Image (tube, rainbow, N blue to C red):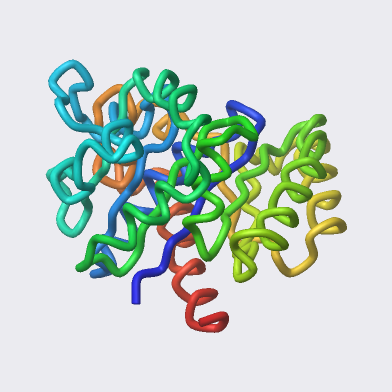
Amino acid sequence: MTVVIATTNQKGGVGKTTSAINIAYYLAKAGKNVLLVDLDPQGNATSGLGIDKDNLDVTTGEVLMQSSDLAIAVRPTGHKNLSILPTTPHLANVEVELASGNDKFTRLKSALESVEGYDVVVIDCPPSLSLLTVNGLIAAKYVILPVQAEFYALEGLGQLLETMKLVRKGMNPGLELLGVLPTMMDSRTTLSNQVYQEIKKHFGDKVFQNTIPRNIRLAEAPSHGVPVGAYDRWSKGARAYKAVAKEVEERLKVVR
């Protein structure tokens, strides 16, 4: 059975897409057949895996509008076991069109149910509580919540957790928080450590034991169109995401 994980946080710049790409990459490296779904109109996961957005005929937008099958839109990434459902900024227009559809909340869920052969699907949701994000949450079984180790980290999280609660109550009662992932950690600073303790206080054992440090290699990798593990596998960022992906696997064994 395919495990579907949504990576989400309505606050931008917290390492959400970086986390989606690199967790997907390391799960694929561990032998899982992984599909990364780019559900963010910015298309950063698409470009971050070296896909040229100008040469895409079929994308997430066409799949959600049901003018194309998901299997046709999926592309290989050049990394073993890792495929992507790419997107372009056109997805923002699709969201407007989608709003008038009867099944507007379940389009992605329906599309994913039609494909086979994947062990894990990782959805990179937009940095907003939009119709697209709700589609991602309804399609998913688990949520990974990246949270930046900075002063405003916990602001707005209540709203996201409330949205998850409504989704559980309505259309996806099985939705679970798999883990909260502290990102951009700088253990040398008091602020990072204070924020980390606050996150632990709020989420307890839902917080991943491994955290993601500030790391220049993580920032550089997307401009080369590869995950950090393919760019510099010995970097701190690569080792951190490898450890997190292993922890994701361990958590999935416990909760499934």
